[in-house]
Length: 112
Length: 115
Image (cartoon, each protein chain N blue to C red):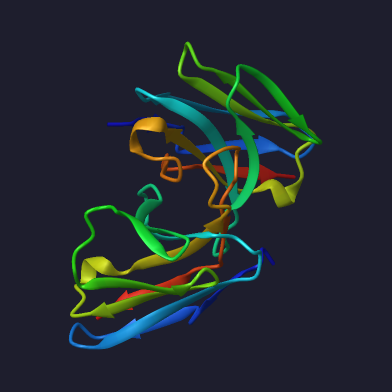
């Protein structure tokens, strides 16, 4: 089976940098996704990593180390609107191309 | 607005009722999904349809019955539900190819309460 771990909750201050970690165990890793979900809204796609390294997209970056089963999402210059849940999801070759397994999500609270 | 719409947004039903959830995607995708999101639990995949064919049933009880009449529409028929089925039901869509990232685009969900 697959196991995905993320911290339950994090707090940070406006303008700061925060790193949200995700560790996973899977036998046939085939990609890792980060989604943002504001309360009461749909999850929205943030990033995708399938090779080791850092993917940068504006204020958000995502890093992957396949050998360590580890990813992080880095949010810079935090804004109040970044308060949301951040979901890590892994795709496994063994369970099918379209099956994503999600972590429980990390709730980020950004304060002034 | 992600291009995936769901109706109704909120639904309260008794355990003996029959209701249906509807999802429509305007993105030209070929794959559609139903997920269940309960409090303090991970998003849980229920069903996958690829080019209108069901390719995944994640051990979902038969009181949930999906229907995909075409690549743009997906239904979830509900009957004799239990209170523990109360949750947010999310629909998603993506490209149906087997290569590439092809991220999933989610609808806003239907908040279901079973009384």
